[in-house]
Length: 196
Length: 196
DNA sequence: TGCAAAATCGAACGGTCGTTCGTAGTTTGA
DNA sequence: TCAAACTACGAACGACCGTTCGATTTTGCA
Image (cartoon, rainbow over all chains, first blue to last red; front, side, top):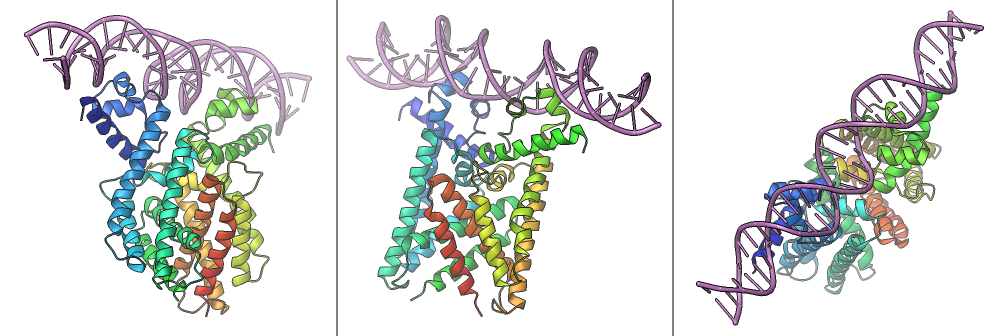
């Protein structure tokens, strides 16, 4: 890997954390350069525009999410066990102390939902992929007979994601660790209400 | 009402809308002054600091929410009918075309959750009040025999709010009108899974 | 080892940010 | 009616924003 690519990775690694704390718009070229002891112009040259930097950060975030939450769950058998693994991995991701500012996606969604552009497009695509992956896992659970036949996988994914989203909001804003147990209870109830 | 108070209301009314579109941090003194054809300094004098302006906007938002979503629901009989009214009022609030940028709370939560200060405190308090109001309405539904006795009202409020939050995210980011129907379906399932 | 290419830098740009201050105009109550 | 209080203004501030550009250093291959 060339020196330039190495630097680029270092930048994105830091930007990824910063985005969780301060939002995508809060990832500032100057602040980023300071933290990494680079010059503003040197850092800037790696991306050419702030918009490209944001897209790159979003790409990093979604590939890390896939790597930490989705892929490991494939080691669990398809169906309910895999859904449960996704859930637990996701909880861990959202509360990971190595990401003190938390996951950047909720913030990015709020920031970009009314702001057309390449970053928004990138976010929409990654969120659609995520939802599809969830719905697919739910479909497998139906096929395995773990969820009842009439289950709408997209609806299941919607409710699944909603529980996680709510947990994150309470956990971050209210600093309420009970939110994790609440989320687990909600997930259990979700699963049982779709039971065959 | 004095002239000054009138101006202050005009400012907050516009700021309220702007915050839904651009976030609390995006409510800029300069942009706000331009839209209202006021001078920056004239507008600024009404609040004394940006932080105070943010607190004022948050206060406006939570009192409008109470007025539009919670209070009208008191006309419905306590218990399930009232919960359903809250839900429908809330859906209307979230998708109100008179608030083109949507509700500012999800954005404010994401923005402020890692940023200590008076705006965060104001937001936390208003969100706690909201949750308590929801939990109280759920408690009444238990008392009325509309939900089973073992129902944890706070847990019910958590899941209720989660459905709304998810609906909002999909509706805003994916521009998916189906999200409203998904939310209604999720709410129905929530209620039925807590049925006595 | 030499040299082109790649990477990084420093200085400067116009713009916008929140904020301060002295001043002018307008409302309001005695 | 008249002065005091209130309201709004314009100009300027230092700080930071993203971005440009030419110079300088570092890298990696022939």
